[in-house]
Amino acid sequence: MSEPMFEIKEEKKEKNFAEFVITPLEQGYGDTLGNSLRRILLTSLHGVAITSVRILGVKHQFSSLKGMKEDVVDFLLSLKKVRFSYLGDKAVKGTLSVKSAGEVKAKDIKVPATVKIANPEFVLAVLNKGAKLEVEMEIESGCGYSPAEDRIGGIIGVIPLDASFSPIIRVDYKVEETRVGRLTNYDKLILDVWTDGTVDPKEALISSAKILMMYLNQIISPKKVVKEIKAVEDSLGLTGKLSVEEIGLPTRVANALVHAGYETVEQLVKAKREDLVKVRNLGEKSLKIIIVALAEKGVRWEVI
Image (spheres, one colour):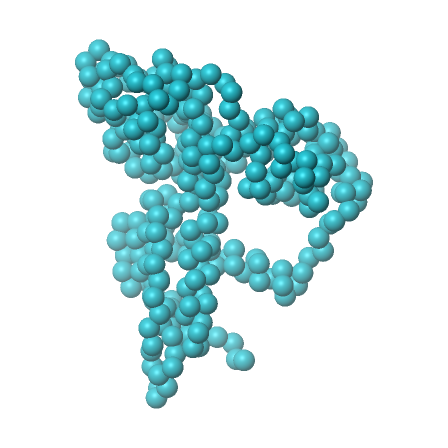
């Protein structure tokens, strides 16, 4: 098969939306690329979300706050819709302190200089005269969707939130027939991408293609997977003495490991998958995060 030659055009461009036309493709490759890129765009791109909240005067999400028009559940649902841009790996703190009547907006959230709010005018709540709203929140980066159950609980007043990290709101694609000379059996792929404003649609498309290439390259030129725990231990060196808090894990993951007795990298790499998945609030997605964090420290580890 000859090397594929096709064009990618950004036919439409609006705020947080773009339509891409990829053509001409060999017959069948419209669906092959469209379905693959759509799945990666929706599930594998890096994003940021609020993962836990503490509200002064509120012990749980089914409480009410005096002077706030919305109930706490509605307020938490609004917080989930606040979108952030942040390139760091470690969790950061955000605070909200409002003591005047009127609308409370996303821009009222105080965040570190490294964090930007993509929808600052989004209304979170409405306060009556004399009311006050004091909130602390944890902001984390990740991929895909993370349920509240994955986060450490038990601390009175801290409310874990479901987190949708994906910066992609929606992806649609369709395949049409197109002509190349006299031949009409070529595909034209039309890909529509909507984002939350934290990433440009074209950048998102390029990132998803790079992720797909990483998987395909492992088929073409497979890298050896380390399966022996001992081989990993022998190569740890000083890294093995690091605590799990020092390798760039999200706070919730590090806390879960510490509470389960895995305080250092050396202890962690000796763990078996069957033992780790039994750790409270530590799921399969958390294991992937751990593997990536260890890889960044030069430790290639496959939990078995």
